[in-house]
Length: 264
Image (spheres, rainbow, N blue to C red):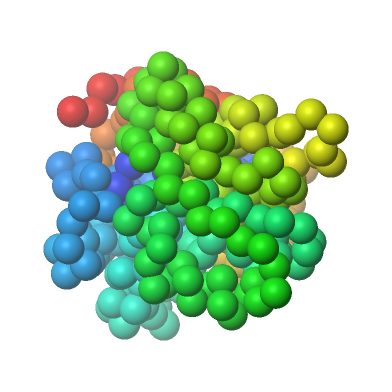
């Protein structure tokens, strides 16, 4: 079994680690785009072209499924990716976990990139899945970029700024960018208020990994004796994980595909 994951950068690590935990024996193909990152500021058309190229590089390795480990790419490029690749390769997108978060009923904050915050896409998800629930959209200026570079000071600054915009009565935070899942506990520590119930965080990685297995008719096998291989593609070229990936538990969980390397 082989699962491919794609993103412009290391935001895909959360879903990659979730797949690895569910199926240690799965061979993994990680397709990144250091030549074209970041994708967020690109036009939808330009982003879609970059995403298609990154996806096709991954699909050339003949995976059983492809996970789009990026919220922005899922918003803009998922229809084109599915039109190009399915039914041959199932394509699984990443959607912010607003529905399960709203099911808890408490005040919810959605941490997302500034481009996504207030967008018609996110507002539609809130309308469809969080009707009647108090929801605050929180723009996280610079957080994804800081996580991508593993810049500890910039991460702390961005998390603190977003926490200051989060209402004190919030009991649930949706991590609306895959990068944010890599610093989930730092977000929890910044938002948790004294005297409030334990903060609930909702990411998408676990659900996306499970959906990928379902789409190919497989189930979890966390006790599998074998450990699958890891292939890293950098804008289509075989390479190594960016060195910043090793700053996170999710990156350290993966076997090395060559030495981790600086990516400019």
